[in-house]
Length: 181
Image 1: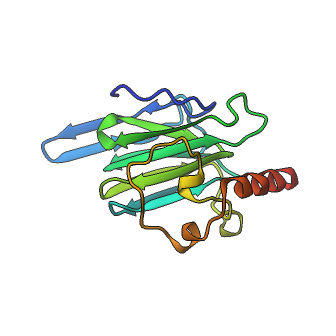
Image 2 (image 1 turned 180 degrees about the vertical axis):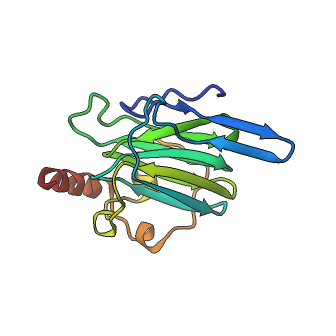
């Protein structure tokens, strides 16, 4: 693992992954339950995106995620919106490449956005099953934390992300839904 960033958010410490490379390519070990930061996963997804695509900012109420990057290069931003967390309000944005050799746990309550610098594949495990009706919380990517320096001024967005509201609205909705859940 190359020198991973220090992520100032509880539960998001980078986890080394193993690459078994040869002249044909690479077999990545992207998850082992025995790794630090790992948790029981019930669903795995792979997100293939073109350079210039932004996914997020989103936050989940009902499951943790384990992000791996087997191919490509992205800029990822994280912000802790869990009021009970000792790292509430902390955020970070950094460039991440498949060659870096680490994964990132993203607990429920961590707002996240991923900007794809190159055509890339982001694979991620979930601790609970994805449910469309609960996947509704988000904000404009450039409102996640105004102090973040993004690598681009614009991005290709989904309709959902295009119509997302402010960070303040996302935080209020997250706290309301968390109290009910």
